[in-house]
Image (tube, rainbow, N blue to C red; front, top):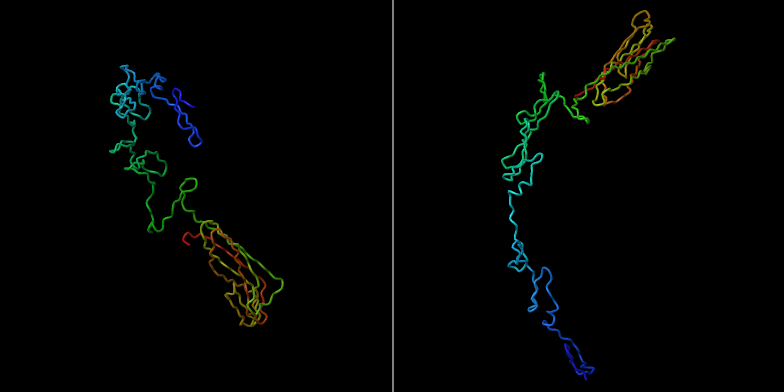
Length: 317
């Protein structure tokens, strides 16, 4: 036999399919006396309602808002008191009477900083004040922009077509185009023979002379004017003949049609040719002296050669 005591309930019949169930019962009236209000809380033990304890102090601004939450209204700021907390530092203009803060624009002469119509700070384009040196005019303002001090073009040709350029170097210095360069080169040859040598019948090289052509300009190609000269002493018995050539170009032929021999006939032939060199190029140029049409015992006994080269860098090449 099971009975329920105070604060308990018994249900069920005690069998396997319907066992006893013992449960306790607690009422709100029993629990409410167990709770009391602490600091900052308001509690009604009769209803069990817990709320915020709002102080009735006249300086208290905490209240319950319409949405049921705690609310502290914004505290009005006294501008007159706050303005005294701020002072103007470098670059700032401040009026404590009105509280207006702005940029402190210097009245110093040459200052181009201003307040634009839109209220922002403004420096006109080209209004920077600069000090110029040699070859520069203007002060950088809109009325007097910086410009190079140039002279008048003194030539009849158009400056836009024939004027050289000005460039900025890696060191920031203005540089003109490199100056043209020129060079003179020469080489000579002198051969004398103890015995006279027969002049060949067919065109045959008998001597050669080299010259190293050097372009002194590392920037521009060069034009070489090369003067080639050959001097030969020849001997012609009666009926003898012979000719001289430079680089296969037959330039002179002599035949003795008289009744006496011709001894040590000195002949001199020359040619003028041009050679193109790339910037900084060195090239070996060879002049070959040849003879031919030797007949009836004609001989030669001395050979001289000269190469003269004028190397001129060519800005228009």
